[in-house]
Image 1 (cartoon, rainbow, N blue to C red):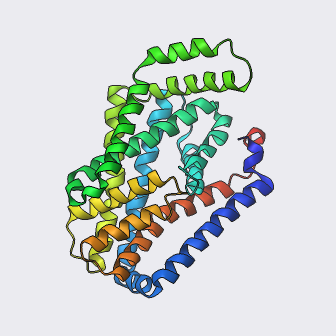
Image 2 (image 1 turned 45 degrees about the horizontal axis):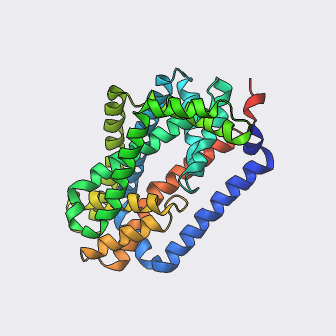
Image 3 (image 1 turned 90 degrees about the vertical axis):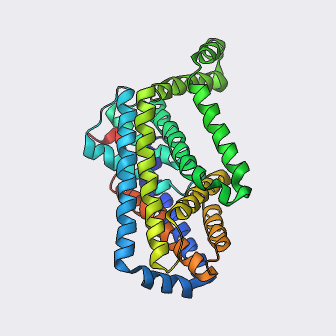
Length: 318
């Protein structure tokens, strides 16, 4: 990805595709329970939605703080306001599969001397830290639905494998030695992969791992609390423990689905888990739509505002 892909008509196509996805999402949500959504919105009120948006904003602030820690651990310092703006651009492409579109940050960070490997290493570290936090939030309520055991265990296995990969430098040396004489794209790709993992390893020292985990837990707990408050305002008598479990488990379901932004998978899991507790379908659909508007689509809106303000190609910017 180069600067050309974030300027001119390509940028307009990206923005249009996200807008179309958002409109499609809202249309499907309304058609599947528009009366319940309107009633739910009225029940949540301005105070409930404002609280949810504040908790989402806190989530983004904590995650940005973690991102800065990763970048500084790799020796990169970017002016805070500019860095925050660049970070937000990634949210514009949250609805891409696996959030891969968030790698657009790497393009804008080039003007500040940040190589692609470092930016992608920070992104990899982010995804891993998010998964650790969400699995941790899910664990206390895991017995509430045994069907999710396999899903959580697979996520835990992925975490262990990733940490083992980063903590075992010997294999990286072997791969680097094997890739050194290789020509063409394969050799180039392997060398970049080794460099990326070495950079990511610098983000996972014991001290940084502890700090990033705490920030991640606080960030995702904020959105889970917003979900609990919305459930309460819609008249659902659910414990905080259960609503946190529902939110975390739904995030895992959405991530595993690899669908853009977890669209469909997250919502289906959230509605299903609420129905298990006797919540009426209109209420379950309503609170699901509201929390996704206050989290996923709020992030996309912020990202689009940041992205459209950066039309000028990074290489041309002074």
